[in-house]
Each structure stands twice: as C-alpha cells, then as structure tokens.
Image (cartoon, rainbow, N blue to C red):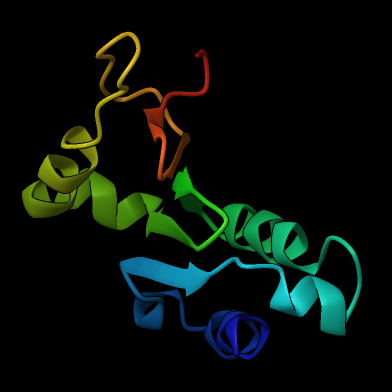
Length: 105
C-alpha cells in the first residue's frame, strides 16, 4: 500500500499524507524479504518523510514540508520525550513496553 501511495504521489507531492503510521511487526519481512519494512521506511525518507518513532508494533513518519508549516505536527513531534535523558527532538525514537528512547540513548 505504501509503495503504491509513493508511486501515485511521485508527480503529485501535494497529495502525500502529512503523517503515516504503519505496522512494523515483521509481517511484511516474513512475506516479502527480511528487511522489507526498513526498505519502505527508507523509501518514505527518500520522499521527504522523517522517521519520528519506530517500534516492533508501529512506526510513525511525518512529511518534512508539513512538519515545517504545521504547528500541530511540530507539537506532536515535540511531545516525544526520551525516558533516559528527557531529550526532545532527537529523532528517531524507539519505543515499546520498556519505554521511549532517543537515537542517542
């Protein structure tokens, strides 16, 4: 679905969603190839998305131009806080049952 969305929006960037959340539980990896989920994250990043957070259940990406113009998206991104260093804006975060951690921690 995400690959189809990127193909559709290649010449229509105004139609790209501002925020994407999708399941990263390994299902695509087992059906397609070992790193299929990271491959789509890479493709989304190449299209201008920023990986905000990754987990073994869901991942969240925000479209860079939308992040620059939309205060509500900046507020949402700023709401992510590392449980170890209390850092904000240190994308991407890793989160799960044990907590939320910034890239550095």
